[in-house]
Image (tube, rainbow, N blue to C red; front, side, top):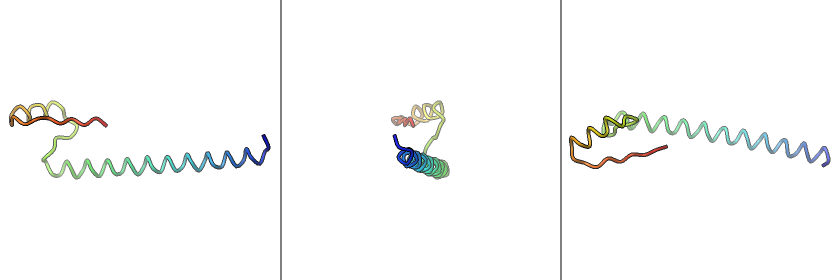
Length: 68
């Protein structure tokens, strides 16, 4: 494989990795923002399964669990 082709492939790999890292950082920031806004509403129980089960039993309402 010619050296020039190896250099081009290496460059594309670096660009792809940095793009993936940026996408992950953006997702992390979005999830954090969503968690803060949901927690502020106090209408949702976030990351506390026992409290969610207690609330569902107390109110007689169904429990929705989302795994991420």
